[in-house]
Length: 179
Image 1 (tube, helix red, strand yellow):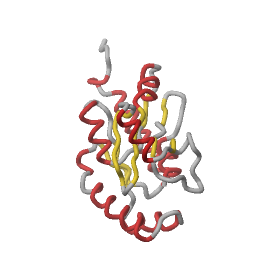
Image 2 (image 1 turned 120 degrees about the horizontal axis):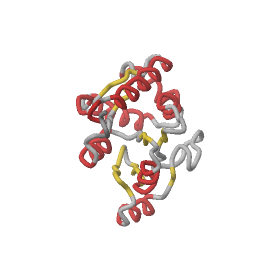
Image 3 (image 1 turned 45 degrees about the horizontal axis):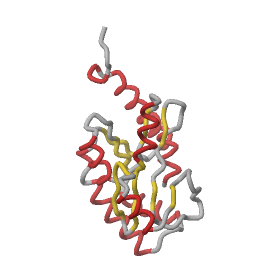
């Protein structure tokens, strides 16, 4: 769930987790403006027409998108931006920003994924099946990412993501000026 992923991503002063906009209904644990920005389907479609999003998709019947201006502002401030998006959105970003870092957070098994979805108690049986099928498709696209982290032990997953980010910042081709 988002709380586990957010813990893995870990906010700090030099890193910001983008808040996506969605047309889905809020769940009981959602906090508008923190977990998502919630709008109607019609409002979302208007935002698409206004070129508001850097990427958007329809995922299991609802729109999800990443606001362009918020990303630009944070990057201009020298803050790393983390996007928590599905594979289609990630591949759209990869086309626009090929040097971006892509980390796939994978459940330890599909069985665990189903258990986590059921434990949310926010999805119908049909939605769980639909999300399972979507996750299966996405897992088969893992080679499109730079790294994969299996989320079986939360502390270990956090450490792996932190290590990947630190290592990427040290890559010679990412350093603007080599002395």
